[in-house]
Image 1: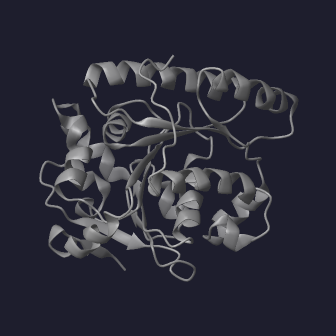
Image 2: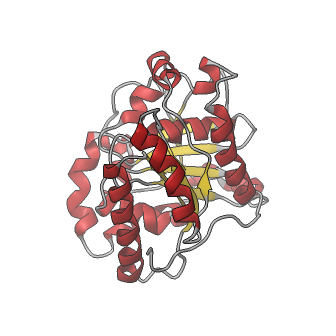
Amino acid sequence: MYRSTTVQNLCSSIINTAMSKQMRLAIMTGAGGVGKTTLAVNLGYEVARLGYKVAIFDLDPQGSINVACRLNKTPAPKATTAWIYSGFFDGTYTLTPVWEKYVNTLEVFQGGSALFKIMSSLAQPGGCNLLKEALTEYPLPHDLIIFDCPATLEHIPKSALVAATHLLVPLMPDAKAVDGTRVLLDWYGASIQELQLISQPSFLGFVINNMEDGAEHQRLSKELPPRYEARGYHVFPPIKHYTGFVNAWSEGVPLRVHRSTHAALKPIEAITGAILKVVKGEKRGKTKSNGR
C-alpha cells in the first residue's frame, strides 16, 4: 500500500517538525558490497522505533531496499525517486510504510531501474540541485531522511551531496574498499569546489562494516580508525560480519526483530545516538572542505 504525501497536507506536520532539526543523511561509499543498504535500513528502523519520523530515499538503481524491506517490485517511475529528477516533479512523494508491525514512523521512497533513465537530466546544468530543490520547495515533515546512494561517484551521489546535511561512510577493511574511500574523499573535496556549496554537509563519521576474522580485516580494523581520527573524522565502533544480517534479510525484517540481543546492535546504536544528537539540535560531525 502506497501513501502519497503532497504539499497540501503537510502544513501541520511541518509545524511540529520545526521543533526538531531535520537531518538528511547520505550514506555513501566508494566501493560496492560494503553493506550500505543493510546499514541504511537498520539505522532507519532504530531511529523510528524511538518515535522519530524517518524516510529512506532509495537513490540506487539496483533497488536493494525492495528486498531488505520485502517491498513489491519497483512501481511506475512517477512513484519512485526518479520522479524527483524528471523535471516534472509536483511535490508528490510516494512513501511506502515499512515494517508496520513493529514501527509506524518508517517509510521508504523506492528507487530502482527507473533511475537509469534520468541520468541525462542530472547531467544538465543544475541537475545536481534537483533533489535539494524538491525538498526545499516541498518539504517533508520527517526528522530524518536517509539517502541510500549507489556505490558510484557520479551524478546521483552528487545530488545527494548537495541535499544532505551529513554524510556517513561505511567501508570494509580491505584494500579495495579503503582505496575506494580515498577516492570518495578526493571526490568530495573536488565536488564541494565544483559546486561551490555554501552549506557543506558534515561527516557524521566512518564505520568499518562487514568486518571478518581474517588477518587483513583484523589488521586494517585496528589501523584505520587512528588514521581517520588523526584527520579529524569520527570513526564509529566496527560492525562485524554476521550471518544474522543475512538471516534478517531473508526474513525481510530489521536485525533487532530477528534477534533483539544481537551483538551488532550495540555499534548500530552508537550511530543512532549520533543521529539523534543532530535531530535534537546538538552539534555533531565536522565539515571537510578539502576532503584530504
